[in-house]
Length: 308
Image (cartoon, rainbow, N blue to C red; front, side, top):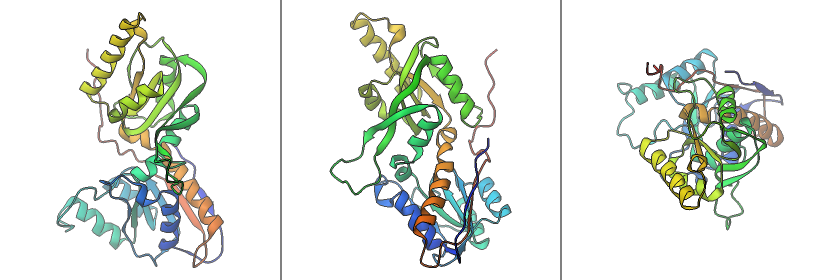
C-alpha cells in the first residue's frame, strides 16, 4: 500500500489557521450530516504547520506515525469524538490520545461526511480508483443551494468497457489496501457489468438509491446480512416476475472493508490541500508544507480463516 507524497514551496510559514481555512473550503463543516462531528478537534490556530499526515482513523498506531514523522497536524476521516463524552482525562483511551497529541504538538482535524459528499471526496476517489468514469452523485445534494461544493453522497457511472463481475471484483481487490476480509461478492461472477455505484464506508442504507440508479453492481462496505439478503431476494423476485433470469438480477454487490473503501481519498485530500494552499497563500505566507498519507492499516480485523 503506497501513496504519493507532495510538497508545496512558498515564502515564510504556514499557520494551522491557514491549513484549516483551506480544509474547510474543500470540505465545509456545515455540509456534514447533522449528527456528525467535524473540523478542528485540537490545536492552536497560530501554531506553525510544516508536516501534515492524512489517515482514515484517529487511533494510537496513526498517532505513533505522526509523532515519529514529527507531524504538526493529523487529518483523519473518522471523528475521534463523534459521540458525546464527559471526560477527556488521560485515563480514558480517547483522552490519552488527545493528551499525547497536544503534548507532542500534533493538531487534529476531522473531515467525515462533509468529505464523503464533496467534489474530490471519498466517493470520487473510490470511483476513480476502480475505473468508474462519468460519475454523478448517487444521492445529489440539495440543488437549491448552489453555494455548496458538496455535490452528494456516492457516485454512479460506467466502466470504460463492460467486464464480468469476477473481473470487476478482482480489480477492486487489486487496487484497494489488503485487509483480512478481502472482497465479498453477491451475484453471478460471470455476469457482465458496466454501470457501477460506489459509496465509501457503510452503504446499505442507500440500497433504494442504488436500485433507482440502474447500477449493475454496487461497491461499498460493511454490508449486513439482512439488508444484503433482502436486496438480492427482491431483485430475484422482480426478475422472475418480469420473465427474466433471476440469476442475472441486479444490482450485484461487492463488499469491502470500511477502512479500505475510504483510504483512496487520503491522497486526493493531501494533493488538494497542497494545491489550494499554494493558490491562495495565507495570512502569514504559504510556507513549505510536506504531506504524507498514512500506510498503517487501521482495519480492526486481523485474520480470516476460510471454512474447510
